[in-house]
Each structure stands twice: as C-alpha cells, then as structure tokens.
Image (cartoon, rainbow, N blue to C red; front, side, top):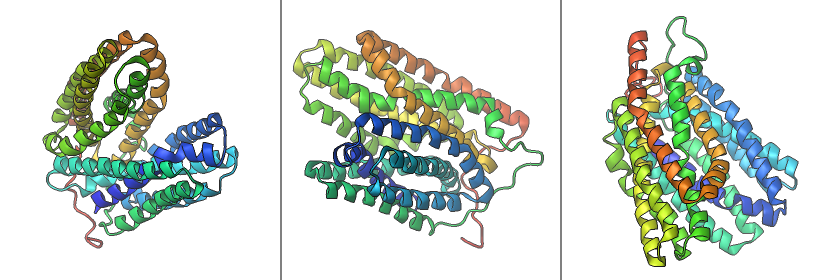
Length: 403
C-alpha cells in the first residue's frame, strides 16, 4: 500500500514538475526570472519544515503527519490555477514546499515502520516504483506540453493535486503505527548534535550533485559542446530512468546494513569517477562515437545512482535511532535539498566553465566523497555502540488497535 501511494504521488510530481515553469511563463505570462525567484524562495523556506515535521512524526505518528502534509499540498496545488501574480505564486509555492518537507520526513519514518523482514528489498522495490511513477508522469506532461493550451496545463496541475489527495487516502489504509517513546533524558533535537549523521548528511547532499548531472549538465554539454545528434538528449533521460527501474531492486536488495551502505557509497563514487570522464570525451569525438560515449556514460552513471540511493537508504535509516527516524530523515532531506539548490550554480559555472577539466574535477570529487563512506559508517556504528543507541529496525510492530 505504501508503494502504491508513493507511486501515485510521483506520477503527479512527474505531471507537474515537467510543465510547471512553462505554465507560469507561457500561460500566466509571468517573467521567467520572477518564476525562478518565486520557486527558489519557496524551496529555501520549505527546508525549514523538515526537521520539525520529522520530530512531530516521531511524537504523533508518521502516518498522520504525512496525511496532513499531503492534504495541505493538495489544497495548495489546486490554488495554483488561480495564480495571476508573483506574490501569489511565491506564497502558495512556499506553503506547498513547507508541507512537502514535513511530509518527506514523515515518509522516511513511515518507510522504516512499514518495511518487512527484508527492508532492503522493500526499499529497493519502493524506489523502483517511485522512478516508474515519475517516468509515467513525465510522459503525460509531454502530451500536455505538445497541446500547449491553458486547459492542458490546468489538467496537469489539478492532476498533481488529485495525486496528493489519493495518496493520503491510500495511506489511511495502512496501520496507524504508534510513536516510539524516547529514552530518558534524551535531547529534543538529537539529530543536530549527532556528528556522524550530520557528516553523512553533508556527504549525501554533496553526492546528490550527480542527479543534476543527468538532468541539467549533460543535456547542455551535448547541445553546446558535442556533435552528437540532438535525440541523444532525450535518450539520456530515457536510459537513465530505464536502467534505474530495471536494476534498482536487483542491486538495492543486497544493500541491507550500514556496513553495506558504506561500501555502496564508495562504489557509487567509483562509478561516477568512470562516467564523468566519458561524458567529457564526447566533446572530442566524431558524431557517432560521441553518441556511443554518451550512452555508455549514462549507463554507468545510472548504476552509480542505484548504488548511491541504496547507500542512502542503508545509512540514512540504519544510523538513525528507531524513536527519532522522522527527525533524522528531516535532517537528511535538508542536506539533500540544500545540495540540489546549489547544484545548478556549481555545475554550470565550474564544470561548464572549465570544460573537460571541470568534468575531471567533478569525477575526482565524487570519488573522494564516496571514499568517505566506509570510515563514516564505522564512526557512526561505533558511537552508537558506545552510547547504547538502538539501531533502526524496520520490523517494528504496528499499534495492535489499528493493525
């Protein structure tokens, strides 16, 4: 049921995210710069809700908090069809992002409680269907973009709003997992003082630069610096999604413990160390060789993405105490979102500005970040053993009254 709810939610995300900017610029006729500023401001303010929302999920139960967040998002998304000014867009988008951050932290806490006896397999399947949902939503958005009418764009927005509402209804069918009592004299904001986890949050946010490499950096590089056919830009996105959907469960199901996660993080860095130079070489190769290099690079990069996301599950959930999963997932989401916010500026100025040298530096950066995975896992596991902090176990039983 959680997989189905997450799938529905991401179909809606795919519908909206692909065409949102076009709606506000072409239909509402707001300047592109104003739309960008409004969405950036909303995203940055929304980050503030992650940790408090996660803490609330720990104390009141993750299902209730996530359902409330989805309801707020459904209303906010529906209100976007009435936007006619920058102020309205910024205000409504901010409400949506605050709810999204809180709901994302609650979702992380819920994943831990719902996971069966094989949590790695469950989370791998969950991510597989999440990726598939985004792909299907993006295809639907493409049809609306082709129609290029106000009605088509409004259907996309309301479709996303409906996906939030349906997701909340599906979550109601899950058990109402009770909140877990914290240990005596436990600090309220313990995630912020957990140095190993804070360090992992920073590394996870840094490694998250690999996502805009595929969605932003590589398409620009192909278009401006190579002789590869323009269809390779579309092929990049399709192949990335296809590899992740086909192989996520097979690879991710084997990455179960924090130790597995540390090694997987290192493996991801090494795969990016290979893929980034291949992307750079496309600028120095004949047209069809360049197309082949792009395909090889994106396949290797997609494998790195699978290992990286699986490592994030294993370390992000495994190093967090059972009673504070929401708070810890809120912190992890804060780090990841901050990295995504900084990524466009970093990748377009440093990597594109330096050309081939920039790609090589990016490859070394990913490898260095990945190499920190195993020692960070050992540090985190050691400190929890010394403090007697229970490691996360997704086999927690639900409240019998709601099971």
